[in-house]
Length: 187
Image 1 (cartoon, rainbow, N blue to C red):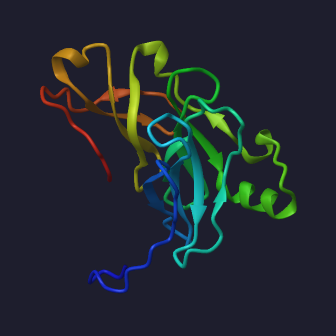
Image 2 (tube, helix red, strand yellow; image 1 turned 45 degrees about the vertical axis):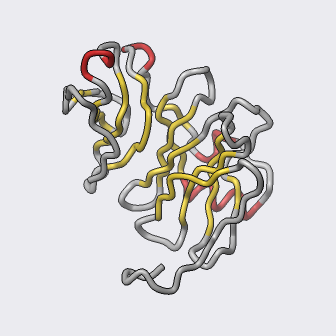
């Protein structure tokens, strides 16, 4: 819709219990990334993109794994890198990235993509420090930090918190240490 709440256009159409969640508009193009849950209440998230006119809907990282959870995309300020949450190589959630420019180039050339060619990489190691990234990785305007909300080992006492880390996964910091919980960050 426009900024006045007019000209509303539905972009996605899902069936049954499937859901579309957490859209994130590229800061430099007309691409909207979002999470698509094929299984409704079960975990089966996939990253997809769509244009604001409803065309060009595509899945970004295909998989036949019904327990895969690639979700909650966020963009670097230059729109070249997409960050997201995934349990891609384990059963716990970490923050990953891919080079979206390379993905677009490779998908134009072929339907088959070698993940190494698109810079797909796990950047966090949160499980090792007993932190679980729950939602919303967002990159700072200078492109140097990521903020997200999650829980640590003390979540029973302090709830969810906002964490920051460098985009390479280093320097994890709990910035809120809240009692009631802090959620849904943005810059």
